[in-house]
Image 1 (cartoon, rainbow, N blue to C red):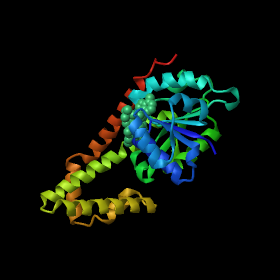
Image 2: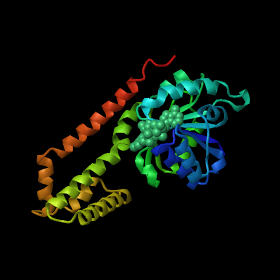
Image 3: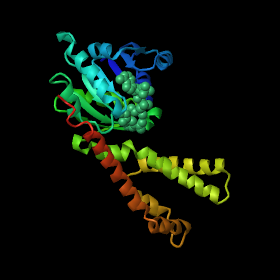
Image 4: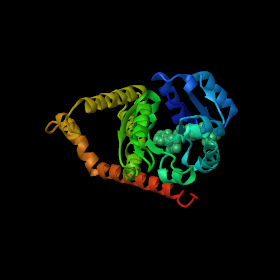
Length: 278
Ligand SMILES: NC(=O)c1ccc[n+]([C@@H]2O[C@H](COP(=O)([O-])OP(=O)(O)OC[C@H]3O[C@@H](n4cnc5c(N)ncnc54)[C@H](OP(=O)(O)O)[C@@H]3O)[C@@H](O)[C@H]2O)c1
């Protein structure tokens, strides 16, 4: 079993660690790096996994999963580039898996020793409950075996899809940010329930269960969402009255614009690091 170090054990990093343990990875094959000693101790206690220094992870682990915020990548890459170069020749190069929004594999390739395999992955927060949508792309030195290994790791916390790297900014906007848009819709629908006089707790239960039910139908059905919606939209009924308002307020166009703006921001985040390679 490969040894895996998670660099930056925040929300996503910790969710991955706990998913890997649930999937049967032995805690002694896992490690993480964390800047705050207090949090490192807490995580080590919670998962039975060792906290290590970045340099130690870079020399010893087979797989380095980068899970820091994109804006924290530069100092981490500085640390990694020197330490990876110090690996004993018989250990070979580590596989680097970046979970960072917007950061291209070329950034890592320009800073790490030549030939370092890099896989870019975009997960989302439902990873916390084992229901992530993760999308992976190979950098120029990543092999089929590398992609399969990353697929297997991320399958422990949800579903995994492969796309060419040029589609990753779109993926970031759709499934990376997607859960936030569903939360936003649910929040707005609960507000509507309150406006109509329902207690907040009742409105929340009605909407959350409707969201879970609708998601389960979408996953279980071969039908396009339009067909599922038409099935609850009867002539001169209540649903069509509501849908007319959604169309009048341009909700469909707003959603498309929102996702396009998220894609543009992902491109911008990647560009912020252009030219920082050697
Ligand atoms: N959250 C999401 O929905 C989501 C979805 C898809 C992808 N992602 C990606 O996942 C990555 C992590 O996101 P997150 O939400 O988990 O962020 P987070 O909770 O802030 O976690 C990042 C962790 O990395 C630590 N860190 C920063 N620099 C470090 C270093 N040099 N060495 C060791 N630890 C370091 C941070 O410590 P401090 O507390 O000291 O800052 C923090 O604990 C991001 O790149 C993000 O783009 C997130």
